[in-house]
Length: 102
Image 1 (spheres, rainbow, N blue to C red):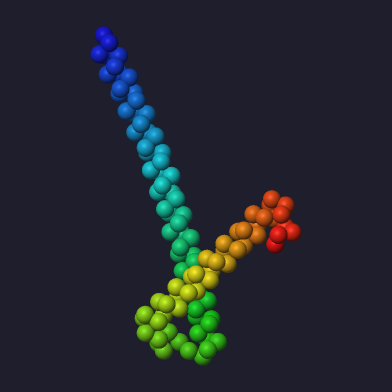
Image 2 (image 1 turned 90 degrees about the vertical axis):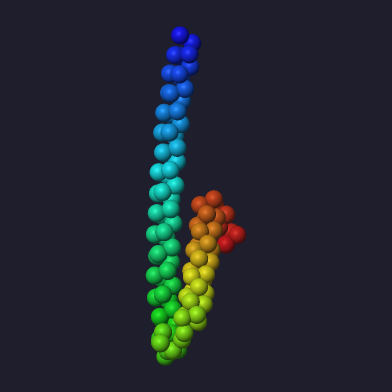
């Protein structure tokens, strides 16, 4: 009788644990999807910024090798990320009512 209760309890705990793990897996999957979307948007914006910068210099992608383009693209991405961080900080300070620090 006690073994049956232990077995049933153990089974219920395992089912609960599986559901709990699935919930966190779902959240992790959704988080990864969101990160990928954000990275793609940053990549697109960096490419547009790089195209604009090259147009101002009267150059094209053909004037540079892949390594140089990759370096310039990484620089543009970093500028975008830094800008987003700054805007987020300013927004957070404004929400907290600390706009005199801006």
